[in-house]
Amino acid sequence: MERHRMAARAHLIALIFALTFATALAQQPPPAGAEQPAPASAEGGQAPAAAGPEPVFDRFMEKMRAGDWNGCAVLMHPEALTEFTEIFSAIVQQDASGEAAKHFFGVEKPEQVTALSPEVAFARLLGSIMDSQAGMREALGSATAKVIGTVPEDAVVHVVYRLTMTVQGATISKIAVAPFKKHDGVWRALLSGEMEGIVQALRSKMGG
Image (tube, rainbow, N blue to C red):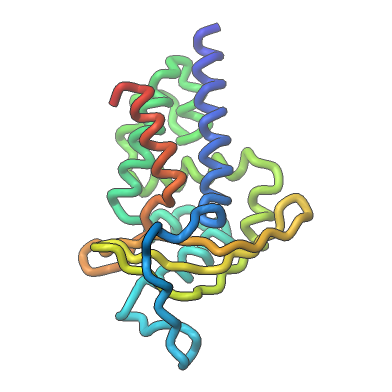
C-alpha cells in the first residue's frame, strides 16, 4: 500500500510539473518594479545575437514545439537542470518499488537515477511527463512566441514575449516572461518563477 502511495505521489507531482512547465511562462508577470522592455531592433524585429538571449529563446521554443527534449536540455542552464532533476530524483528514490524510476527516467532501480547526467535526466523526465498528458504535445505544437523585448536584472535577462497556444480547443494569448542567464559566455534558460516556487516547496517538504 505504501509503495502505491509513493508512486501516486510522484505521479501527482509530475502532473503539476507538466502543467506548470507548459503554462508557467504564460502566467508569470514581468518582474516587479522592472523597467519597460527594451524595444527590439528595427532590422528583423530581433536584437543582435550577441546582445541578448533572444536567439536562444527562439531555439528553445522551437525544441519545445517539436518535442525535442534533448534539445531543450542542451539549452537549459546547468543550475536549472541540477535543481529540477535533483528534487525529482529524490522523490522517485522514495518509491522502493522502482515503478516511478522506470516510468519517469527509464531505469530499473531508483538508485540508478543519480547515475544519469542532469541533461539526460531532464530530457527523460520531461518526455515521460509530456507523453503521459493527453493533448499536451498538441498544445505545445500549436504554441507561438513573439519577442517584445528584454528586461535585465543583475546577471539574469528576462525575455518578455507574447505566448499564444491552443489548449483543449481554446486559444490562449498572454504576455509571458522567460529568464535567461549566461553559462560560459552563452545564454541558457532558467526555471520559470512558478517552477522555481514548486521546486522550493517540494524541497522544504522533504526537509532539504
